[in-house]
Length: 297
Image (cartoon, rainbow, N blue to C red):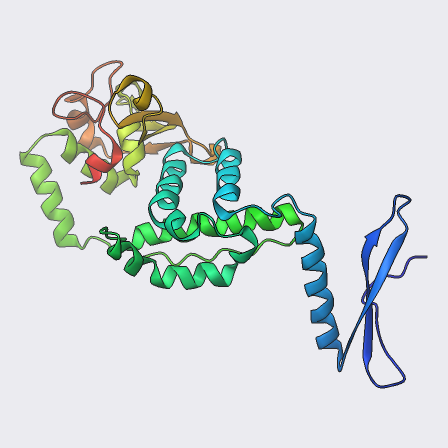
C-alpha cells in the first residue's frame, strides 16, 4: 500500500529528512529526491518550494510574459464575464498594468508583487499624466489577481483568495430623499423617474438603462428585470470609423439576478408618461437609449 501523509522522519544525526517525487519515467516509475533540515517546518518548506519549481518548469506558462498570460486569461474569461467587466479589465491592463509588467516573466508576478504595485500604482499613473481613482485601483487589483490565479491554476498550484477592499456606499438621509421626491414631483423627466426607481426598487443603473416599456406591468405595479445595458468598446471602429464606444443590452449573466420588483402605485402615472411600446423606458433627451454611466452622472 502506498504511503500517505508527510514523508518526513528524523535521522540518527538529528536532522530531519523528507523525500519528494522529482520526476517519473516512461513507465511511471518515480525518481525521488531528498531534502534536509533542522526541524520539520524547515524541511516542509523546502519540499513545497521544490514542488512549486517543478510545477512551474512543466507548466503551460513557462517562459511566458505577464501580458501573454493576461491575454490568454481575457480570451478565456470573455464568455463568462459581463462585457462591461471585460472592457474595464482590458482598459486597466492597457493603461496601468502593461506599462510596468508587459514584458515581465509571469512567474515573477506574485501576490506580494501585486500588493506592492497597488500601493504605487496611483503615483505611477500620475507620472503618465492620468489620475487613478479608488474604483480604478480596485479594477487593477482584481484583474491582476485574476491573472495570477489563472497562472496558478495552469501550474496546478492552489489559487489564492482575492480580498477586495471596497468603498462603502453613503446612504441618503431622510432630508435628501425628500428633496429628490420633491424635485421629481415638479420636474417630470426620465432622469428623475430613474432616480425614483433606484430609490424605491433598489435597481442598478445598468438595469434602469435596459428596461423596455414592455417590461413594466402597470396593472400589477411590477417591473421585469432581465437585461442590463453597458457602454463598451466598438469592435468595428477600426474597420468602419464609427463611434469609439457603443451601448449594448445583454441578458443578465447570472440567472439569480433576473427578478420582478414591485414599485409603489404612486409612480404608475409617472411611468405611463414615458411608456412607448417597444422603446426603452428611460431615454435620453434625444429619445435614444441611455447608457448607465450617463444616467449615473
